[in-house]
Length: 336
Ligand SMILES: NC(=O)c1ccc[n+]([C@@H]2O[C@H](COP(=O)([O-])OP(=O)(O)OC[C@H]3O[C@@H](n4cnc5c(N)ncnc54)[C@H](O)[C@@H]3O)[C@@H](O)[C@H]2O)c1
Image 1: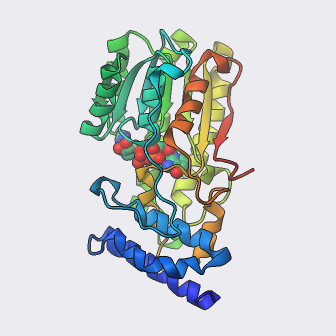
Image 2: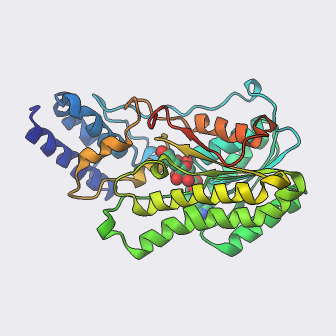
Image 3: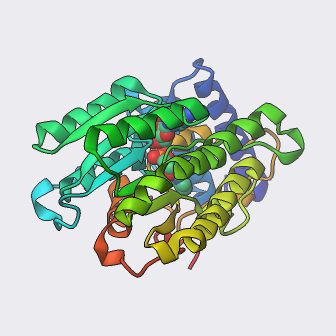
C-alpha cells in the first residue's frame, strides 16, 4: 500500500468506521487494523491522522483506549497548579459560559486560580456544578447556574443571578459553543440556526445583558471565536459564519464602549483537544484532502484547554488594560 489510490481507500475506510463508531455499532479500537496501512501513508499521513484522531475522540468518557500506531494519542488532561499562576484577578468577578467542559471549564478554573470569583454557566448541569465544586474545594469562590445559551430568557436570568450573587461583574468570558461539518449545499436550516443561535446570537445576548454591569466596573468581555473565522475552513459554512460574526460583534462592541472603559476582545483557538472535536466528522463523499487546511502546524500537537484559558485570564486582567478589539489567535502557529 502507499499509492494514492490505496490511501484514498484507507481514508474511506476510516471515515466509514468513524460513522459506525458514532452510530454505536463499532469500537474505536477497530482503528487498530488500519494503523499499518496508515504507516505507509508518507506525506498523506497527516490528513489521515486528523480523521483518525477525530474518530478516537468520539467517546472519551467511555474509557476506550486510543488507537495505537500513527494516531496521536489524546493529550492527558492538564490541570493548572493553583499556586503557580499570577494573582491578577483578586477582587474581580467573572461569568464564564461553557464552563462544564473543555476551554470554558479550564478558563473557569484559571480565573479562579488567579483570584476571581467565578460564576459558571452551562447547559450541562452535573458537569457545570462539578467545575464550580472543584473551585470551591481548592479554596476558591464559585457558583453554577444551568443556562441555555440558545434561550434569551435563560441568558437574562443567568446574568441577573450572577450579579445578584456577587454584587458586580468585571469580566464575561463567552465560551459556550458547538458546531459540525456539513457540505454547504446539504446544510439544513435547523443546523444553521442552531449554530448561529448558540455561537453568535447567544454571545450577543450575553454581551447585551452584561454591558450595563461592565460599564459600572470598567470591566471586559472576552468572546470565543475560532481560526475557522480567520481562514476558510471546509464544510463549516454555519460554524465559520458564526465565528466570523463573533469577531465583527467583538470589534463593534470594542468601539461602542471602549471610551467608557469597557474592553471587548476575542480569542481564536486553533485545534484544541476537547469533546467538541467529536462533532466535526467529514461529510460522506467529500475531498478529505481539504482537511490539510485545518491541521495544526505540528499534526501531533493539539492545544491544551489550559493554554487557551491562559489567554482568557490575560485578557480579563489589568495586564491587558490597553488591549481592546483584538482577535488573539492561540493556534500553535497553525495560521502563521
Ligand atoms: N476545541 C477546538 O478545537 C476549538 C477550536 C476553535 C474554537 N473553539 C470554540 O471554543 C469554545 C469551547 O469549545 P470546547 O472546545 O471547549 O468544546 P466543549 O464541547 O468541550 O465545550 C463546549 C461547552 O459549551 C456548552 N454548550 C453547548 N451548547 C450550549 C448551550 N445551548 N447552552 C449552554 N452551554 C452550551 C457545552 O455544554 C460545553 O460545556 C466553543 O465556542 C468552540 O466553538 C474550539
